[in-house]
Image (cartoon, rainbow, N blue to C red; front, side, top):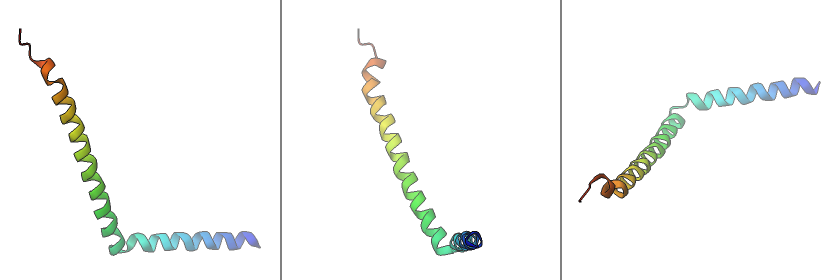
Length: 64
């Protein structure tokens, strides 16, 4: 008897998740959030590469 109730709750959970994923408002908000995090991630990586390059710059040239 309790097994049937749990399976119904799981079914209702997945129906709710599916309805949420079909929602344009949710998907647009999720895409905006993901693009914001990706832009921050790319800027941080480029800043790291620039700092690494500028620190190693004197070693690239031999002044003697």
